[in-house]
Length: 437
Ligand SMILES: NC(=O)c1ccc[n+]([C@@H]2O[C@H](COP(=O)([O-])OP(=O)(O)OC[C@H]3O[C@@H](n4cnc5c(N)ncnc54)[C@H](O)[C@@H]3O)[C@@H](O)[C@H]2O)c1
Image 1 (cartoon, protein in one colour):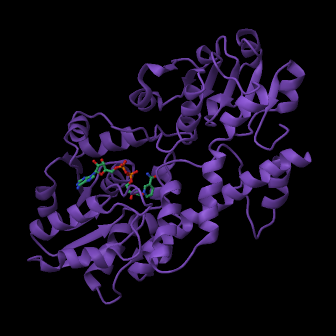
Image 2 (cartoon, rainbow, N blue to C red; image 1 turned 120 degrees about the vertical axis):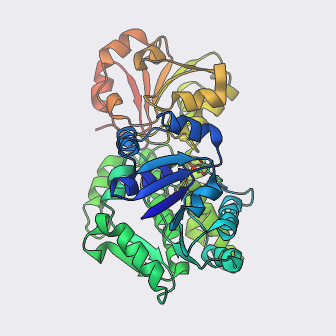
Image 3 (tube, rainbow, N blue to C red; image 1 turned 90 degrees about the horizontal axis):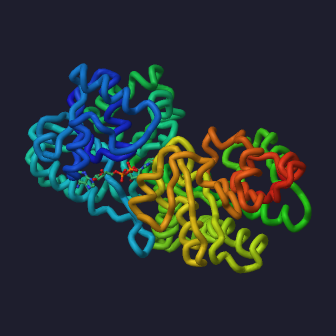
């Protein structure tokens, strides 16, 4: 099939490359001409494990290309997939301007009956809104809601081996149903992974899934704070709770608060949508409030528990800047909240991340010292804070850190290190509700 993927960000580039890999003829189109120019030169504008190789192979085999001519790319395609950003507006609602723009271009330029697939995360009612925008088109446009569930850092696998594909469209729309079934056949094989539903339910499913996951994290972060007060260990509580099959073990990790371009904005957007319909989602609102507070935890711990309220001229080393491992994405990362607080308090910040340093440099310039080597960040430091649990930080040379840090204080924001072992070595260890078993 001839596909046009509009938006070449984390979702669009991964999905476009994966659809090319399964034999489709894909053009990835974007209004960001600099991004397209890099892609045409064989450079990726973002880091996602395995994506460089996947893109290179499909480009060289002629199934994947890039274009900044969005209208023409749409006109050449039978299926147009929309993966543009839907960032939060100041009132928390999702900003749908980019989605609307793409729908308008489709309405004007579609040259044949076209299936228009909404992969961007969009609030309930967007499918209907897009149908209104394309209703005057010269060609029939079949609108399908297909929220994306891939996770940065594991996106290729998530795409190729999805838990499920959610598709929302009019049950009587045979062309849309047939096209979507064929498109996803290679990754679903038996069609049982496809969950068909109406567009409104599909749109809501995405927000409910993200909010539920975020809620588990926020609840465990509250539990972690309680653990610290009562002398319990959140690690053990998590294990005890997560082995209950009704609960399951995932998304129960306490830490510095959730970040990324999805959970924070999606929780708030769901609350906003509900309010517009006269429904108050108390749990979702509290999930966001707890997370906002949690994102200040590392800074508060440093300042008040370890430096008596004064961080001036303290050298603080950060390991991990991306909002999670295996991505270069720093959007809403807890590391940024920590950096802002530390700089505001007059501390010196030195940091390392395997992939995200360029994105942090673009925000802070020389106000943050970024080191190519993780140990160099900790040289002469008054504290080392583990913010993102990249594998390479899991078992570092603590003896070397002990020798090179000015003060042997480690703040383990992901509870991955052994507090007992580190204390025995002479470190001061602090975690998030964990004694550090
Ligand atoms: N990042 C994730 O892990 C993830 C996962 C699931 C769903 N989503 C959702 O998918 C959508 C895209 O997310 P992302 O992280 O890939 O965003 P992104 O910011 O990385 O990429 C969006 C791209 O869309 C382009 N764009 C904007 N307006 C355009 C227009 N009018 N025409 C063509 N291109 C345009 C931008 O230039 C940018 O390259 C969002 O709605 C997001 O909530 C993201």
